[in-house]
Amino acid sequence: MSWKDTAEPLLTRMPSVARPEGHVPFKRKLGWTAGVLVLFFFLRNINVYGLGTGGSNAFGRFSSILASQQGSIMQLGIGPIVTASIVLQLLGGADLLGLDTQNNPRDQILYQGLQKVLVLVMIVLTGFPMVFAADFLPAESVMGLPTGAVKWLMFAQIFVGGVLILYMDEVISKWGVGSGIGLFIVAGVSQSLVGGLISIPQIAGNWGFIPYWIGAVFGIVDIPSPLTARGMGQLLFHTSGQNYIGLIAILTTVSIFVIVVYAESVRVEIPLSHARVKGARGRFPVKLIYASVLPMILVRALQMNIQFMGRLLNSQLGGLPAWLGAYNDNGQAVSGLFYYLAPIQSPQEWAWFVFGGQITQDVWQIMIRVGVDLTFMIIGGAIFAVFWVETTDMGPEATAQQIQNSGMQIPGFRQSPGVLEKVLGRYIPQVTVIGGALVGLLAVMANMLGTVGGVTGTGLLLTVSITYKLYEEIAEEQLMEMHPMMRQMFG
Image (cartoon, rainbow, N blue to C red; front, side, top):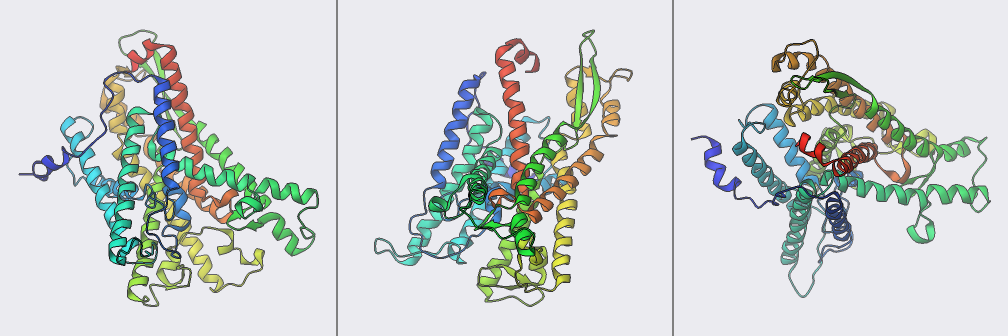
């Protein structure tokens, strides 16, 4: 008996959101999407009951791309979903699951059930240490309950939050527009980005880019002469709290928007014609960022899990061997293996000479860390892009079968999945690797230069790419609403 037969009773009984039986009107899709987003923002602002003061952010700057909010019911964000996806990607890539999700309906149901089970496991494995084994979520006595009982109450709340975000994602995927995970990332990053542009100290506690430079022009804010080293550094890399308001930050932010939109439009178009309908032609686009920017979530989540494990071990063991790493009072690795594996998150972490700060590491250590981060993101981006393409049926074989099933073929070639696969194989693997490596490079460079709102490079890349794809999907939905015959043609 295979593992599928053993696990089938459990996996097929996992609760799921029912699929719509017929066509869902576009306005109703927008309504479901907006409703879930409102609920998401609402839950982000509900603090965990019993949470004490102090503690530290478990995810740090990773919070934006994980759509998490420190101390709230959304403490875990999409982290468990992403981590479960990494596990499934690795198992599927090594062909250890034995599931044919493309052609076998039973395997599709088993895969979806397995994904939910893994998400629940990851919620426990991530949330339990935050409450019981570290100082990320300290408890305080409430209603006369002992501290142990309060911790269990806190864990129950973030567990429910993790389950809610799982099914909120499923609601949007089946009843709304776009992907729930993508929209949650866009919502969190956009909130930080808008705050970084317009916040004022009297309300937010720090300067936004626009108010700061308006104040500088009218003499409300004093800035040193740009002819001095200090003045030039402030002009280019000035910060206010966690917000970057120097000119480099706005240039980096705008450049990422332009580069990603341009890269989304760069493509190789393979001509297609219908085998039976004369004159029916089309094109299959192989974009430069063929695997999209979403694999970057997997790369950053892997880095986040490594850093989370290091902080957890350091907290529980009272310190780590010198070669593994030493931590400062803020819970950040300052030496050893965990320091080198920590991603560069801001200009201050490498460009100390611009900010005039003191460094605790040697220059060669900083350069090694920058090199490791670049290597990790470029190679990791390419590898996870390949995994993403193969496990989401975007590879040459699966794509060739989809084109064959639609009745299309490449003009001048015999109508055969093998021929289609051979032609697609000339482009898809190479473009996938190049696009994944390019996105990894852009993410690191954006972090190193800083962005408005302190948004991470990965978060900004994801926001631009997801928004662009959401725009394309909305345009397609509107086209289908205007021309119902096209909906029937494309199924």
